[in-house]
Every structure is written in structure tokens, then in C-alpha cells.
Image (cartoon, rainbow, N blue to C red; front, side, top):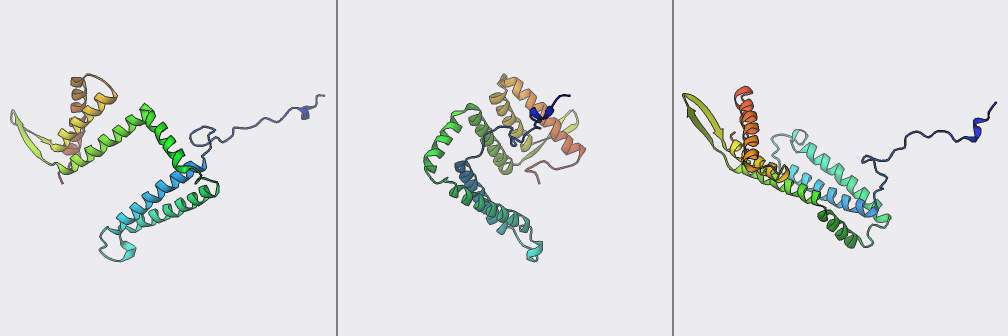
Length: 197
């Protein structure tokens, strides 16, 4: 008979975090996150207070965003205080500038920020420019809107930057995809395209 007590028991899988890495969050990262979330929650609360209130406070459309912002602010304050107790304030500015330099030193991060900027400009353009032109081709009326024109241009730019295909190919793919989607919403679902309401 063998004695199995000398062999250690098998360990099950261990929790390594959402990103599946062993890297722990530092007090400095926690303080930075607390500041960002705190500012974001104050912005959300401020915008929710500006929403019109047609009736009582209990039916106000800004009530849920305000409460969500308030709960985020409370959590951000708690995270910030915990980070400060763990020494996050020591050389926070210096460590932050190193982290920012490392972030912007990575090409993938710069490309992500470029994409965010392009999408932001796209949303502004769709919101500000609105037209819907009717084009007759052989007795068939086809509508072409500012939404489609802006979407084709911006999608072509994104494909050119990230896919790095020739410009005619990017324009062709963009045109086909945008016109197909816009036609499905305009003619199939009878839904107005953005900017045309």
C-alpha cells in the first residue's frame, strides 16, 4: 500500500484578473482612474441636471443619469482615498508623465486615438450637415443623403489608414457597404437616416 499523503494536492485554476495577467493595479493607477471617473461622473451629473423636466423629479429623464453619476462619484472618491492611503500621492505627476509617454510611444495606442478622433469628427459632420437629394435614373428615383456621403468618405479614410488598401478599393468597399445599409434602413425598415429627422 502506498502513502499518498507525501504528494501535494493538485491545485485548481487560479484567478488572474479580467485581462488574464498577473499585473496588479498600483496605487498610482488607482488614483488616476479615480480622478478620471470622478470627472466623468461630475460631467454626467451636470448634463443630467440640464435635461428638461416636464413633470416631477421622479419622472425626470435626467434622474437615472444623475443617480448613476452620483454612485460613480462615490466609488471614485472611495478608490481615490484608498489609493492615497497606499501612497499614490508620492511622485504622482512624475509617474503619470512617464505613463503618458509610454502610452503615446506605442503605435497601436496612437492609431486608436486617431480612430477615436476620426469617429468624433464623423459624428459632428453627420449632426451638422443635412441634405437628401433625389436622383432619377431611368424613371427610378434614388435618394442620396449627406449621411451616405459623409459615411462613405469617413469609412474610406479609415480603411485607407488601417487596411492600407489602394484608395479606389477603399472607396468601392465603403460605397457598397454604406449604400446597402442605408437602403435597408430607408426602404426596408422605413427609418430616417441620421441628420434627416
